[in-house]
Image (cartoon, rainbow, N blue to C red; front, side, top):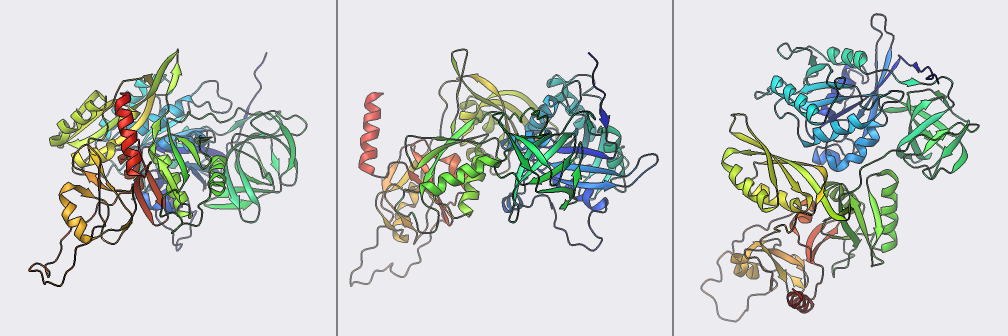
Length: 628
């Protein structure tokens, strides 16, 4: 049986830029947009224009995969070419976004910092790219361009970094074709690219030419009817839900009927109300799009990611988008504390469930399931950061929540319980390497590599269970005095590794409600680190500090100084208090124990016990001790 002849569109390229966090993906996209003439010369454009979300701007990371398009002018025997660029997240917690993005493109640009080299998330995105099969290709793996960025850094070591990338590829069992790739050296901030690390370029021409020469044009079967895969969703206030599609075969036309095939294989005929393509950062209405193009389709209200738009006369579904299963879960419920309803306007279980259901529409890596309580749900995701970002977004929308401690999701494999294992890379000053080694050994971490580049810093690679890394980041930053850099990514499932040491400090818990007083804080300052300041309202069961000892302690932080009619010799002395320790949401999720949770409102993050009544907590602890 002969293989059908496939045609190509030489006027188009689709490429994803993948990298570890903070290696310069979004900055490079900025430079590509500027130098391709997308913006006017006098147009005011923000830095990292692709990071458009508030949380993306604040945290300086890409959370959602987004695409843009630039047009490169004709050159030699090559005509004008439209290059669609997909900017992907660099954090493995948002791996679902990476997997969606890779299903849209025909090749990748792997961006690596010239000083830091490949890190865990580099391994993650590279592994995913090697598993993808390009449309019409006879083998897995997307064509790759290696981009060594930040070559202007004083500690840049491009030659060693290239060798490390080759080692990584061999470690991932790459074949000969996969390791035959061009290398481009860039300074994204300055907007320059060169094929020689010792000769900086003047602009990004070398990168643009390499993309056109290396990334294959989209291919399609000219005899095959329409097939378009829904890879993302968006919304318009005027048109409703928009389906972002990659057209694999045939043509999509405005006003025409198409067959919509959902994940269950059910087919319905729908009308393409509006059709858009991307030019720069704008969506432009169009009448028709062809194979290889990425477009937005309006008119299908219930469409989901992974659905197929096909020819009504011959509807054939494309393979759906497969994503890795979640590894962490936490319980999210309504706010049940005595202070609920003070700042948020979304406090009911119905509104909370509706919001979680909406999140599932566009977040393919998330799962939501019921619990034994009607006002709480178990939310499963890739990691603590992904779950924390969801809670932070809901908090800013006016929700009040109670969030439980993240727990790993075990799997039964061959009749045995397995747990997720992560690859951890830490960069620390030499004087802290011993402390970090001890901390990770206590959490069942196993060292696999240690590298000293002679700069005073040591890079150590570990394999450690996800369970042991919950709460590790805060302890790690304390041990390294804020100087250490920690990166982690899921590796595989391994047999259950036994007990893991948890936080070795206890909690200071308020034993009654009322406002905190400076007098009480002054007398309790030697008990540990306080989380509250004078004037804050507390309630019974609220965690107000970290005990220096391992056990929990109930105390009164609302105690007032007794007054009488006798002037005190120290009455005019100023009370000096240590400022309270303020925790961000991610820190709070890491810090708490299994019997604790976080109260999240638009204006506050409070730690509390799951059971607020101290007498009930004491009876539960006694019962657990007797059972043991």
